Length: 375
Image (tube, rainbow, N blue to C red):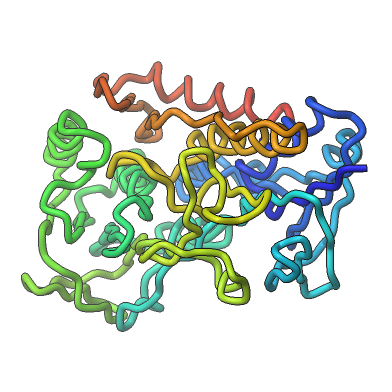
């Protein structure tokens, strides 16, 4: 009987589980994750402004695991052995005939003083911390920024920073004290949001100007203090710093023989195979994939990569040569709490539709539609 192990419980991992089970009711599927839950990160942007509570964006997966008939192992992966046929965890070993790694990425915390910044996509706790800090502030400066992995251009997640920033700016307006706050957006990139496409860059800068958000662009970051952001182009004070660093691979990758990219992610081919490995696949933030330099690290891309990984892995068990690939596609709604900007980018097109309440409600509707599979 074929046994497949999936590492993770995020978007790519859950899509892999659903596709595996739909393809074969007899498969033995082992799932390894520290907690049986999905954090729906796209909605954490609404926690600081009160549109969502922590319990709204965390889905308990125990019922989903029962419905799909998987063996859930509450553990963290620590390494691999036997040519990746055995996963080492902090709760024992799990053997497999095929492996899909979807355990996410890890934020790079190398900048001096980075402990003074809150990394919003680290989890619900970070969003709650931002909420509480904003709630207690009666004025001051809030700085929002992001950076990348210089050795891995695609290993960055800047989009949510715009959403936290625009949402909090709108929230302050609704509180009636926006005039007491100075908001600053900073990034080493001279064109913020460039991976979303040229139209998005212009649109985001216009939105920031319209909302009286200052910018500090194109200067390499040097570090943080409790009340200060320092760059090679100068420094500025900040009472609250919301910052998204670049991403790299999980620490447990070091205890494997899997090939790594220069940026520390698992090196994959267009079929989502980990290069040179037998029946080992990767999806989402864990992998470094061929494609355009704007290839996004987002849930939608993880889902597409997981689908390709499942098709190819199951095909290998039938003796087929892996041939399924994923479509490089970026699609998102940059939310502002009451409206949203739609951005879509493919290798052929780049579309940006201006801010409207329709897109805000579309984002909320998509949240319901997506999570109903797991609730």
